[in-house]
Length: 164
Image 1: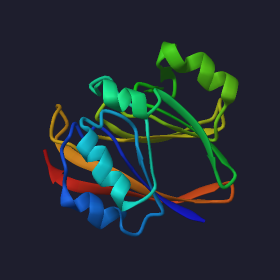
Image 2: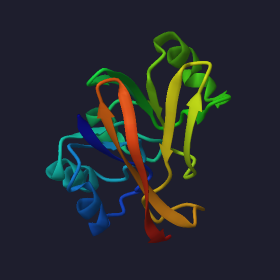
Image 3: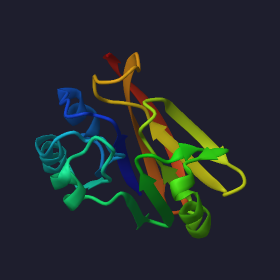
Image 4: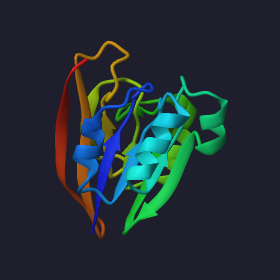
């Protein structure tokens, strides 16, 4: 069993609540638009850190993290990217890869809209944790925590960090 802390779209904004809410987690995942090397380093200092780069991330973050990440945690195949779309409206640039690999869990950011849905066609859980930073149109900053236990994904929590 592994507890994941998931966030996206920090846009270089550090909030001490990240450390507070991720203290119970085994890993931290970032779905892009990290915003700075310093922010990535602070998150990586807390827990093992996985990330993908987003459209605002500079060259150093693009060299450090992939655009699309595929990995396995417990018995769950994960695909994570920044601009992924959502069930029924996936980004055309990753749709083929998504359909070919058929992960159990697909994570995307970019929209700044918190969304958790099950894609019946892909038999896949979709999570967009919303935006944890202050840049953007979102009103409330959010992150997500959940547990992967074997092939099960459970105990998903949406955490509101406050007004943008």
